[in-house]
View (tube, helix red, strand yellow):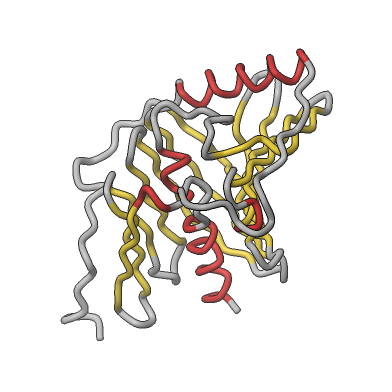
Length: 215
C-alpha cells in the first residue's frame, strides 16, 4: 500500500494537462463563469505564482484509499523540481527542465518522461497562466479564508483535473489535488514553506543511486 501511494504522486505529476492533440470524444473543457471578483482573484493568484522562484516545503500526500506519505519538495522556477520521500522510502523524482526522472527504489530502475507532457510542466512553466488555451479554468470557489481553482486540459477534459487550493490574506498555495481519468484522487498538502531558498548546485541533477555498498 505504501509503494502504491508513492506512485500515485508520480501519476499525479504525469497527468497530461498541458498536452496537445485532437479533442476527445467528450469534447472540450467547459470554462467556468468568472465574476469580476473571481477574475480579480485569478489575476492575483497568477501574480503570486509567477513571483515564486525558489521554494522549499515539506509535504503530506494522501490518496483516496487513505495511504499517506511524507516528504520534501524543492522547486526552482522556471523548469526545475525535486521530490524526495522521507525515510525509509528511497524513491525520488527530479524535473531538470527537459525530463521528469522517476527513481523506483524497489526495482532499482528509473523512468524518464518528457517534462512538457506532464503536470510538472504546468507548475514549472514561466509564466504560469491559469487560463492559457491548453488549460481551462472549470471551477472556482472562494470562502472567507480559501480560494480553490480547478483546471482541466482544454482538448481532453476526461484526462483528469487539477485543483489548486490557496489560503487568502495573505495569499499562499497550501494544497493541490489531482483527479485522474478513472476518478482517483491524490492530495498533496504543503507545510513549512520557505521562499528565496539557495539550493546546492546538484539539487536538480538526476544521478541514479548506486548500491554496491547497500545491496
